[in-house]
Image 1 (cartoon, rainbow, N blue to C red):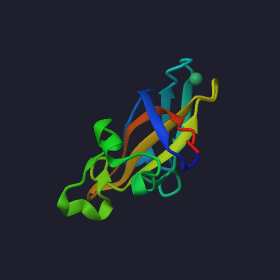
Image 2: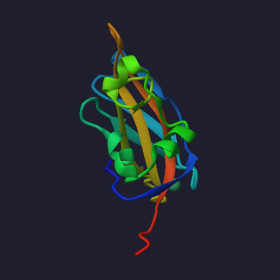
Image 3: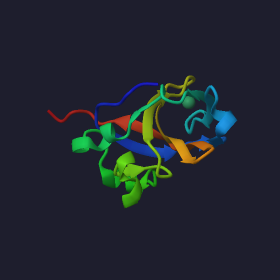
Image 4: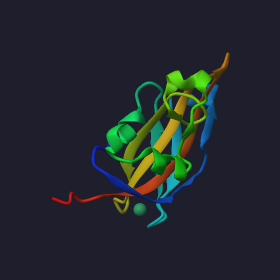
Length: 142
Ligand SMILES: [Zn+2]
């Protein structure tokens, strides 16, 4: 997993085997599997609560990596309702939302994953993977 700091263009969403985990399924981590769009290799990503991922704000802050419109139009996140805005303006399932960059271990295609993690209601902690998308870095124009 790595952070992304350059502008990117999103491609196709990858097939994710299971994208919703709760309570014991997340302890100590959740194993997320996705199938590469290019070579069909099944990749494994381990998400560990409070360790994995980077705040999604870093992607759309000053449109650095993606714009809010990119994130909303690709159904990666939704606008947070006013009562939960402390989790950020754009979230998945109205919980603290994070992203990560990864790549296919077989063909090296780049992927962006987005998920949220937190206590949905007392006694119910969930990890919700919005999806994993192929991406390409945009070359600088200067
Ligand atoms: Zn691949």
